[in-house]
Length: 460
Ligand code: AMP
Ligand code: ZN
Image (cartoon, rainbow, N blue to C red; front, side, top):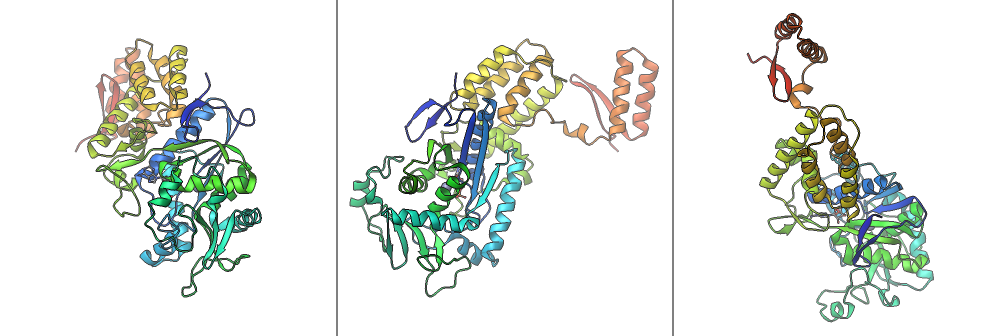
């Protein structure tokens, strides 16, 4: 069976096939780096990581591009308000460039905590101003743009199917319009290039055929995805908030520039909510990954928590559910550890696993399969190999996990404990007792538990 994915553009789950055999070109919208990312944002990157791993598991050679929005994202999606980077600069007293650097580094570090695979290309909007100017020029030459006092706008009336991705009701939007359009002709038109305000010195601005200014938010993704993946590629993804504005406008730009709808598949992750509302940076009330870690949860607990829901379903954050995820993940880790070395994976379980992954990345059912496997009467080495096979997509680092206490025990003490265990297996009680004495002298004690011997520092 092929991998089936829910394509927002088609509004249905359909079999995935790449444009070029065996190769998948994947673009994911990255963060706007004016503040820390919150755990809601990370839910989207975890979903995209599962997608990438599932594609690689299915045998595709994936080429993954993620952008960094470090200019042009305004505080309002209606092309008004301030650039988030400049606002961030005022908030923190650092320059917009320093902020971009700091939050990009923090974001990339947190992805490693979550065991999210690094994309092949990271691309920053500010490193691709020329490409964006060229794309805007092409849009203008083809008659899809108009100039105003404050910039260049995309003329959405020129596209018959503008808004198809989001199934936008353009007439309804236009009729119910209460917002100030500023210089725009239509509510759905959007900025391609904004001129720097005359009365304000911007930190980030560039010369262009239209005057000194900065690119609109949407053009960066169209220009950079085309540069690294070509004007038509396989999968474009992001959080569900991107459907009605950002991705809709990326498609409009691609139609104007290259006469394509950019990606064959459009995938969107549902939001993480807290107290019934979406978690957002702009509201200022959000939880960082660090906050979980400071409370004693390791970052992979958050990953495990996300795997417990389908990526297209909203997920509510509560401390009780994080506790539940921590308990379940630790149980899975300890169980897996107790199985010892892997043998050969079980084919029936692998077939069931594939079926669940291919069903639009059904990770809750993959987790259920892990518990089913644990309760089965297969031998430990088969269970271990099968679980590690699943972990290629789950990404929970089960192969390398060690119980905490054991991890803190020096290698030579571990070696003595193993020697003692070997002696006991050989019924060589004298050596076993001697090893126990040596371990005690070194300041540790060894206890025999149902999961095997456990070494810990002697309590004083
Ligand atoms: P931003 O930094 O706001 O541009 O967002 C980065 C990514 O996180 C985008 O793909 C957003 O769609 C996604 N995102 C934002 N808020 C949430 C949330 N509460 N839950 C899940 N994803 C989110
Ligand atoms: Zn984007």
